[in-house]
Image 1 (tube, rainbow, N blue to C red):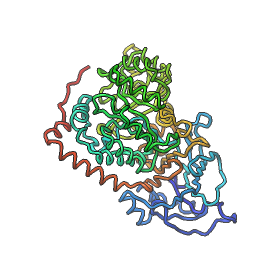
Image 2: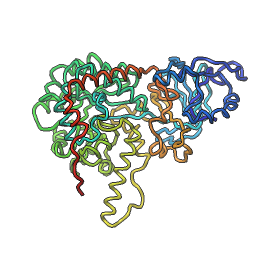
Image 3: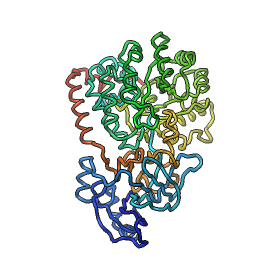
Length: 534
């Protein structure tokens, strides 16, 4: 049996008779042939699968090949029609359910209706043959500067100082609202494609109301779930928070419902105890607006920032501290007592120098953890990489400290299950959405990711959770649902306009390059190499 998704319409057992209908064909979700067939017909075709696996998919029609080349795909997923995943290994991230082999998941409307063995097939359901595949909750990224996507990879050699030099002090002022739109549009398409079903747009490039509107327009234009974190790194103070523009945005674009696909919070970098900072924090508390802050940045903000947030009564479970990696024990105790969240960006912290990833400290004090990617100017937008970097950093430090003391670590403390939880349920919790998403639990919204398992690195699977964390990658993301809507299937985006995203962001890069002197561009790509110190 092929372990990639196969769509059957109508589903076996959906008709009035017990016998399977004769095979017929129709346009499929990726432009491929979709067969209405019995289990016997699928098994009979298994011999032909081997040749197709080398190409990473079942044999497809010429239309499907053309669709995959262009990055678009027609779809036969009809709105309102139930979707049934049949026979998956379901990594629920629900502590009561765990990992369920050979299990079905039924999605009806926006919701996960049932999880169980051999579920009955509702009439007119679309059945995805998930035998052998891994089905897990969608990833939740709690901190990504989506507005910088046009400059993808430019800062691969940067430190945090280089980032401030080029992005904040120089190039950020060049971005027009249309550049913000293009970057956010592409960044959200990338997130959906990679199985990140909820992405936090840490939008501190929103230096004017037009820039903010453009960022939000792009988030709404691409299907999927997102959190708009309204920020402004280019303002001299926090006057922009209280001058009416945030209230206008709330009234104009956000209805206040937690189940809206695009929700809002504030992104406030509190770098000192000032009257306007206190006013901005009070503004957020008065409106019950969640807040996210870059915290614990080595040499920039430290324990005093945490003390101010405590003094003003700002810390709470709806407050997320990004990085929080250069703090003292008293600061971590304050965070833990408040119930505030931490967003760890291990790729960022290890490469840029904000401080060492603080997962060990967070676990020591019981601080909830989520994961994030920061910015593709430097690193990837890959949540698989985020999980690996988090584990590598935490375990590496534990081994180093033990070896410095002349000892060896007997057992690793941080586990792969922890990393996957941070990337799913932990992210949902940080955004206050854990009652809606983050686990495969009946009654929750259907934000799901299915990983195909026919690639060499995905074969065989003995430990599903560990396999997701250490073996899988973005290329294994076969199917993505957000709020019950199929946005990717058989590796091809559905109703998501990748060609438009590419065109917009390439045009934006062309414009930005026209404004950046060649000498600056070359210096940014190739900053002076540092010296290695012990």
